[in-house]
Amino acid sequence: MTSILWLLALGAIIYCFLVLVAVYRYLSVPPAAQLNPLSISIVKPLKGVDLGLEENLRSVFQQVYSGDWEILFAVRTAEDPAIAVVEKLQVEFPMVSSRMLLVGEPPYANAKVWSLEKLCDAAAYDLVVMSDSDIRVTESFLATLSNEFAANPKLGVATCPYRAVGGPSLWSETEALGMNTEFIAGILVARMLEGMKFTLGPTVAARKAAIADAGGWGSLQNYLAEDFVLGQRVTARGWQSILSSYVVEHRIGSEELQANFAHRLRWHRSTRRSRPLGYIGQFFTNPLPILLAVWPLTGFEFGFIGAALMLRFTVAFATQNGVLNDSASAKQLYLLPLQDLLSFGFWLAGFFGNTIYWRGRVFQLHADGTFTLQQ
Image (cartoon, rainbow, N blue to C red; front, top):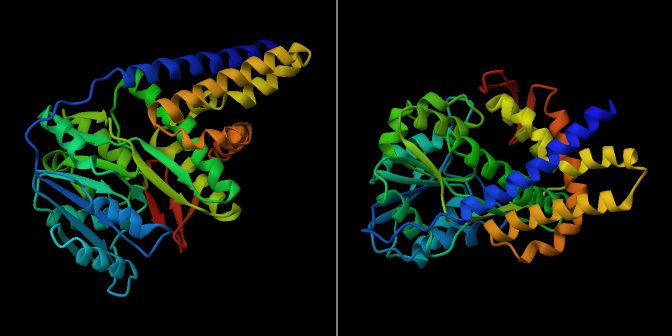
């Protein structure tokens, strides 16, 4: 048992060094050269008015882009309060081409996929940027994505890394810290070891032709992690995928304990079915619990736990500050031990149970990554 613990600790340490190499590899890629701008459709499914929605949407309207572009929004009902927010911004930015679609209730489990299907059908341009309502960007957002796609005609999809911004609750802050240190680290290591054969996150850009080659949105209607499956299918059809150089800002809100824990458990249960082997490998992405388990074997040597903490904080700083340019959240790094312990607990919990709670409804998860409404 002692030997196994030491081997697990060694694996966690090796993983930390892999993250540092992966960070270097990502940052060493030069930005795409400025080329003739492509025409772009931004599509945004909306439901209700989340915290900061108006500022999030305003940041999209404020793009400085010389190519043709448009913004399409989708809501399910005419009573959705998000409509008023969009209409206010349409008056404020009359020079930006924008439309609101009323798509009705989804006929299948994944409401987001239903909205994206309708939005992409209505989009005027081949390059579609799918962005959630809680995303905030700078004025160079479209220009950066355009350059990356214009430089490579075989590029089918691109995932934008995101810098999570939590709300005032402790649970929101720890989740944001986990996204900015643990989650992005896993993406970078996967990119380095196997390439970007998937897409993840709240902002994905794709060519319509690549989406069609993947079977179209309709074929993803019952998948919870539709973004991940889309990337898998697109790359399987010969298209290329990248982790974009553009970092978006993900405003995750300020859920209290119960809602936050339900959200995180849903994400872990979904990930276990989307990437079964990768999910097992996540054991090493929380090094502190592993190293704490080994600590008694050293006679509670403070030099050992001090070195472990220094390594973990170094890796966190490399992802949070080096990749995501998030120097403002450095003051929250003291929460890292708590976040690692919480994340390890959710990882364990993800192996059990097939039920998830999403937007007030209960769903049943299946082994192939699909899900159905339970009640």
